[in-house]
Image (cartoon, rainbow, N blue to C red):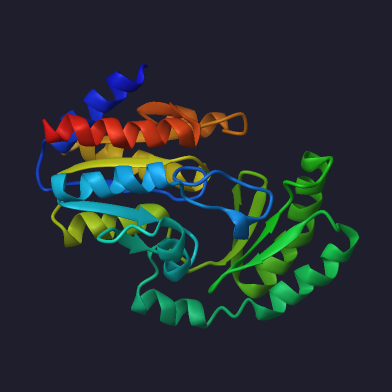
Length: 258
């Protein structure tokens, strides 16, 4: 499907008002880099999001990173930011009972055998990035074997992404919960969602379910050489990497502004 065709499909979904464009951040608005702390959102993506703000009822970013970190990364005034997978006050109370501090220290000790793995600390979870490891699949399998008993003991669960494994509290919501909350709070009808990884597939499926119930929506997968088949299969359309996302945002703003 061409970029023009994806833009037309998105415009069709967004014709049902109130309407929103909602996007993941890492791997969608920002390119994935060896060190997560070095990830940035380009000025092109920022301008595209800003151009859409007056044309839609909601433009939002949903991410597993903390909200404050996402705000600094995207740096688009007027955008709605949902961090920590949309953890609300009630969920935070449940998550607070799942202290992953001991689990993180156990993981840190085990990582001494894997100097190529980077531990990223988050407010309610932590991630292990193995992008810099020579034999990524072998390290992935080893990390899962090491982390599964740690997660079980801490009352947590594992989430896999592109060259990363995250240990989160069992009570932590998913991105589909975050998008559902935005849809409810803003009484959304049309939704376009962009995402690139396994954690986004639940949103893709939710949009398909909404569409079956008569509410327009479009799920767009941002794909590259690391994209898993499940992500492509769950999406309605694809864009080739962050560069095409930048072009899509600009083109969609022009199309909606006509």
